[in-house]
Image (cartoon, rainbow, N blue to C red; front, side, top):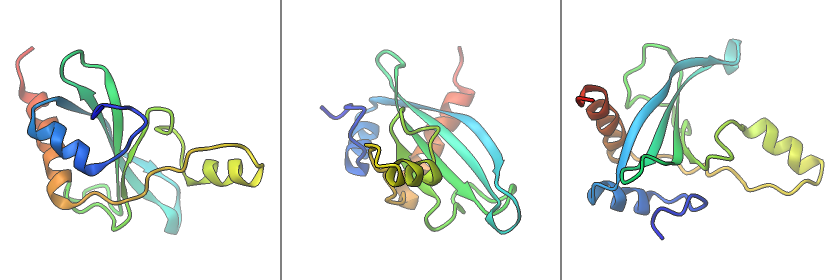
Length: 131
């Protein structure tokens, strides 16, 4: 139940981290998005089931600058996405809505610093873990 890929919830995520049920890998490192005033930089983390390494969700963190510290993501620049939503942004949501197409809203609640730090730590552990 806690690993339902369609349910995006910080409390569930923290419970799974507390019980060592997840692994995390950073899959995108500071990819530039947009230009000018709408320019941002994106880090993407794949959150996976530790038992079979199957991807569950993605965590997206947006930054104003390429060299920002990990916890310096923008105020509304962090969110958890389902795998289906992982490549879709607000623009595609607006297009679907305007066209009257069914869609699931992208979860836009921001990560708190503690949970974000736990995701970053799990990704760092994965980077130094022996194969």
